[in-house]
Length: 74
Image 1 (cartoon, rainbow, N blue to C red):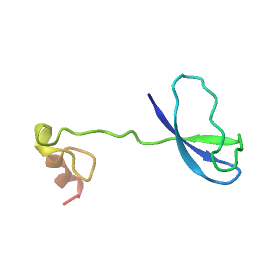
Image 2: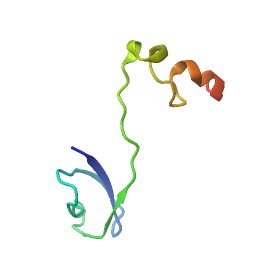
Image 3: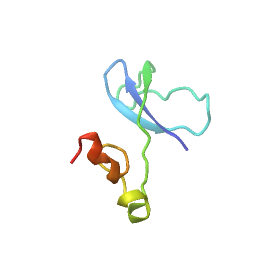
């Protein structure tokens, strides 16, 4: 089930909502009930495998730890 993030154009509140079906209308703002909201683009969450993934997981550069040193990350 995808989790979408929205921002209310009336009051500026940001909120998340699980959407079960594609094409479902955006949910109204939980704070002011306005229907003028925009869907925000979020970075998906990625679960790494820890020690079983390359070089023990992901580094601060978003790549496997072994390759972060060459990208300028300590």
